[in-house]
Length: 222
Image (cartoon, rainbow, N blue to C red; front, top):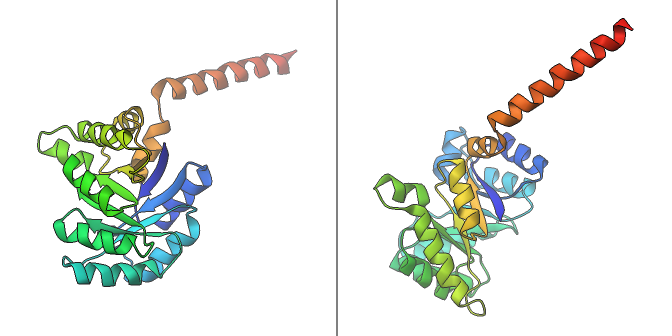
């Protein structure tokens, strides 16, 4: 499974790439505004220059013509841009048009297997089921990920869409996404940091250092 960062924070992205574990980014105007950035195009291009893989950023229009026009403009910003299009009937049509132009589409705000199936048939490069938002309303977001993967895996010769487990709220979501066979999970920076943390690892490191200091201390007295 590959990991993307869901952020627009340049330092966090640089750190993730430096760790060697982050190969893509998902972002949007809201995340960019949180960083105090006003030049949408500039920040997306900066992210694209840092990240080796796809950088998903979204259109604002809700109609087909507007989505397609915006997507064409965004796709011209960098070679590794993927354009987020919502999982609506207009979004499906826009996805079909854009896929025929070899523009990568990340079909976002997916909450059902039917939406994921239609997005795949329309030619989406990625589908993003929002796990945490389903959990928020009492549904099982990871069950949707498993169901979509089951459907996609039934048709390996015709469905090439990659699932991005999105709206990740905690490290266990990443574990469940990996167990479900999700090709990608996009995570906030803090979740990435939490993934490597374990109290027994911290205790073990402290004990090793304490023992080493005792050994070195005895050595100095000899």
